[in-house]
Length: 595
Image (tube, rainbow, N blue to C red; front, side):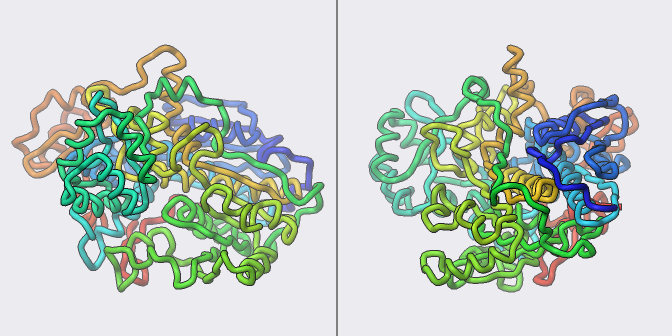
């Protein structure tokens, strides 16, 4: 189709109309985000209808997304069963020593954000001359994407760098206050514990599992460290953190988060490059296709750890050429164990297929070189420390001078929305926003998941924001600054619970919620609506296969819980889905399909 005319569009989806039907855990997220992007809700179907979302108007052919949980014949019918099958329960449960479901609808939330990405990408493709095509998004593929780093590590050539054993934060003060501790510096770690007079051998033994908890989803710390914090009041713990350079954050409740919530969207957009002008696509219209709507576009990514690299990885799957900006000597995480053919399996999960250029951003000549690269790019994406881009002269307004139609994207921690916020890392944001309460049933003590929930969901939000910025650029003809954050990801994940708080209801799920049932040789997970009836039947003496057959005979839905992620490669529920890359590392399927 012909590209829609350039307009004075203020939001990416202004003048488009929205219709939804199907499972509200997924389509509710989609509808919320599309409305915040400017779409107007017109129709809402029944929750029993097949999951679909349609955007019409604005000069575009209709864009449609179909959403589904997965293969119902394999028992993948809802959040609980998809968490069980994809390994989410196994990874989240490592801290506790056995599989455990997330009480929040994490996979549904991720699926909803991915569906928004698919719709935005389809509209961008149309604006760049591609034919319209519906997109399908499956929750089971979203679940595989969420555990892709853990899956890659499980299929690596060598063992983990530290033990996969139960244990980890949060810590408890003498008053019984739960808190998170964060530092990326071994010196600050040692200084914090020295100030609390912790045994030196426990401090030394604790650093490695603490440092690797982002990668392993567990942290078997010496019991002496937990004993030390339980013997000290919170004031002394905070003083020790201040003196050492570490940071602590007490766990907030969902009610506390609701009381301070500002109602902001999970991303923000600001025009760049002066008044609107005819759009300048980054590649020839013929480069785009329904399956690769970003073909011909270039993304420069200066990302570290998970959030920004995952966002760029998703843009690459949609056809963009992604060029990583790495420090001299390359990204040190390339060698992080375990490895496949000498390259970190986890690094490959986020960065396979990207090009790389080494740039010393501290050197003026290299910064000029980077600006020259920006002049030919469509997106500049980074997650540097707050204020770093401006300090280097590489902020949105600086780069708009060399590329007025640039989409400048920042994926950060707090988006300057929380006064006095701690370090903007996954576990600290979980602690500060009530996620530790949302992911645990009411009979469990609140605890942030050691699975990197927000880094992954934040990466999905980052890609969503970039796609919205690219669509806004195509429609309005100017560059855009887009900002997303871990805070925005947390608010999206906890939105259903926060709405319960607003209604005066208990936001937490009931005791035993999404707790798998043990069998003679493993675990099974019933669907949420079958859980109470399934728990009434003792299957501990049955094999997993026989236990599932018994529940099926009773008309109850359930599936086997994946406990060994290395087995997913051969799991018939995902037959043909998981492949191996050129390094031999497991690679999960694209989360969307266009047809």
